[in-house]
Amino acid sequence: MQVAIISDSHIPDREAEIPDEFEDRIAAADHVVHAGDFTSTGTLAHVRELATELTAVHGNMAAPDIDLPSVASVELGGVTFVVTHGTVRSLEAWYETIAEATQEHAEEPRVGIGGHTHRLDDEVHDGVRVLNPGSVTGADPATAATMLTAAVDDGEVDVTVHER
Image (cartoon, rainbow, N blue to C red; front, side):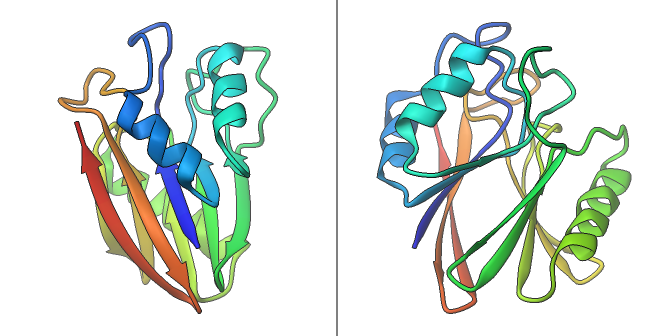
């Protein structure tokens, strides 16, 4: 199973669009995870049109009329992915927030996915693999547009970084 992992689109407030090659990866994925900050309903609708299946959460900058949960989980290829935006100020507290939410919502094997920092990350924190795809559009403070794809099979997750 192929999973596209994106976050922090910030369209139209900071960027105009998702790069074409990222849209292609999103459309080709079996499942898409968005870790928050849809700042327009149009962007949410666009990602829903591209995605075969979508799991998404709201972020701290979400448009007021976007009705998404703060935490969501989905089982894919034998792994439970727990998604939350993570809106704390320090990086250490951000990792703790994502790891704790993941531990609360899933048994092993599990992966936590967060956004907010616009920083690309793949770290283990408190025994939980925590992924942050950065900003799919390269919205400030990111220095590049980034996303992750994950091949998930029989409880194993192989992550690839994509940068533009």
